[in-house]
Image (cartoon, rainbow, N blue to C red):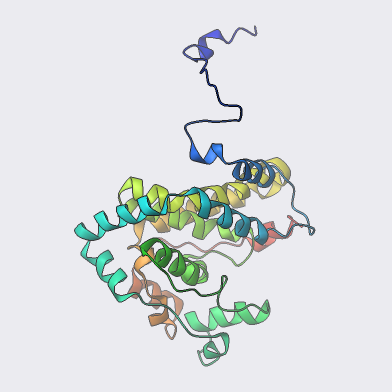
Length: 268
């Protein structure tokens, strides 16, 4: 009844002289990341550790694990064969507007939707303070942070914790559609870990939210698969447009709206 030898065959014991844990995975080798994964994929939610703090800790860890020189080399290869990406980097556009600049936009527009979200939650425009990017990877990260909330708005992801799964899966899918797999994988390392904490916590601790989470994954993946490159989009050009019109102009497709706030309320 308990003979699993068939499934276990082929496993080889690996000898090592190392006095510490070591593997062929740079991610597994980092004790901080092992702790982050075991903690935030398995824990319950609590006011003592607000969920937004999970991702900030992950960003700081990933900065030290990932090989920035290798990622920039991959970007260089892709720029050589992708004129649109090369032009995007050459332009180097960085958004500089502030929250009050959004007050002028009419109801129903992208700018008003963003302004309402910021005012209702007393938030600043920038999730992370602006910085001067020193290379392509840093610029990519800067713009990813600046456009994240717009991906919520244009992609149909609610501004609540479960709603985060939509832009996560938009990016996770869209990058692999429009970029070589190795580069897309490097750029998605944060997203796969950050999104998986939502998935595991839903099943382990809040199962009544699981179908909403799963639906968010499917909705985000559909947008990512059908849309033009999300990372190249300049959402600042459509602040004055109604949301549906902005989607058409930018090339955001496959959007299906759904409520995630009700399920997210169960997480508290």
